[in-house]
Amino acid sequence: MKTNFLLLCLIGVSFQACYYDKYNELHPNSTDPCDTTQSATFNQSVVLILRNNCISCHSGSNPSGGLRLETYQQVSAYSANPKFLQSMNHSGTASPMPPGAKIRDCEITKIASWIQNGVPEK
Image (cartoon, rainbow, N blue to C red; front, side):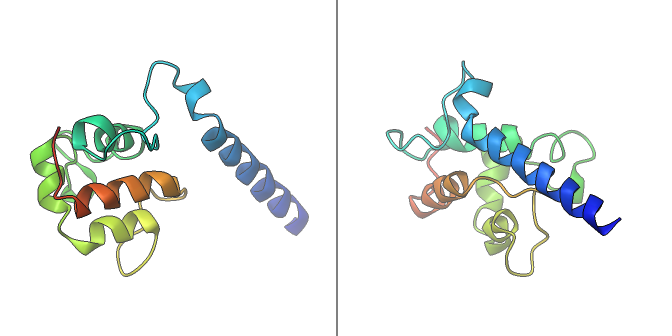
């Protein structure tokens, strides 16, 4: 039983590693939000990260945790809260988001850079 659980965990980690290594193949018509040639703006990178990782739960009339991350105004207002990045980093007292799997480190770095640069929209 314990061996089956460990095997299942190993398979799960393997699939997740494959997903993150193949971003451009999985999203051929999308710009990789980790592209370092682009500046960190909401429209060019942050919105892509949120669409891929957050919007499915944090949108609509009943968003998870009461937190909507659909528009620039919503996200920029919440970005000043330290728990915003803590939740993505799965650190601090914030609930780890997304649950189960962490956002790619390069995406978290991109969002942190966006915040440090004054949360530019365009």
